[in-house]
Image (cartoon, rainbow, N blue to C red; front, top):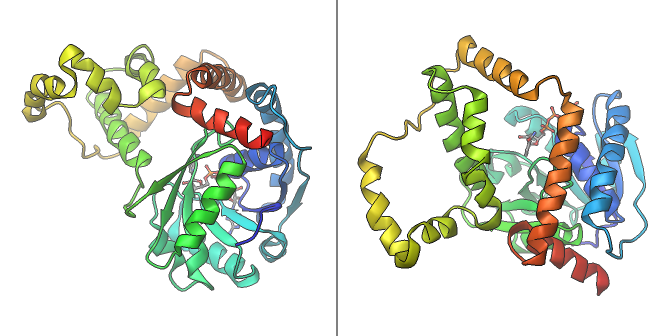
Length: 326
Ligand SMILES: NC(=O)c1ccc[n+]([C@@H]2O[C@H](COP(=O)([O-])OP(=O)(O)OC[C@H]3O[C@@H](n4cnc5c(N)ncnc54)[C@H](O)[C@@H]3O)[C@@H](O)[C@H]2O)c1
């Protein structure tokens, strides 16, 4: 597989824009393709918007000069110019397969094609493509320029070399590559988020809580500690001096209680309205852009504190700094 100097993007919405910002900041050139020509302005705006947070996150690091950004509406042109392609089209299987097929036809055999898909399995995406062995899932998190996690998932036909090369590329732009050993719908992280999301929809549907109250139940407690240690290690600490075994003994019986539904309720207009109106009330007049700026500033500060202890996402930041130094 090749050294990545130019990243090709297929789809330049929320996620494509995040990939562009992260890669450019790490000195990689980007050639971005979207069928909608109006996306060029949006993409350039998204990249400019991400820059202050990226500068703050990597302050003191020896970064190369930023890469250059080119936009095209021609998928084939992008595929021929790219050393690595990241697909970020809407989450619709037929649409993704068609866009990937066009890119795969035009890209050399040694160009990896990764999909940002939130839930499709790589085997579903790669079947029938030209050189399917270099096709895999590289699932990021929004905002891609600040969240270091990328889940790498190979399908039935993906080669080990492609998985290893994608890890090398993702780490070169400051990310933490998590290999998902078995392909399953939703990979790892989205399965966990989806379980919680289904319970949130039930709570809205049953009028148990507002979106604001549900978010309070996360940000003042569990969410605060998840960034440091995740769920399992934190639960071990929940067992006190008795640790993980005591935790299991104490909370194991609750698993038989009807705490969770797991199956989502039907998505009625009433639930959608509660979600939309609830989150608008929480925003209290602040625009999406204002909220993104606050989110970004906090994500930077949290990661810099975590880096001091080489914990959680701070580990990825330290690894990136070491790599740049070497
Ligand atoms: N938004 C998130 O939080 C998030 C997080 C992780 C992964 N993802 C995944 O990333 C992917 C993209 O999501 P998004 O939120 O950026 O979507 P989006 O709607 O913001 O952007 C999709 C872009 O793809 C373009 N597009 C549509 N058809 C195309 C084609 N045939 N060729 C090229 N471009 C095309 C659209 O014009 C649009 O600009 C999805 O698979 C999604 O599941 C999203």
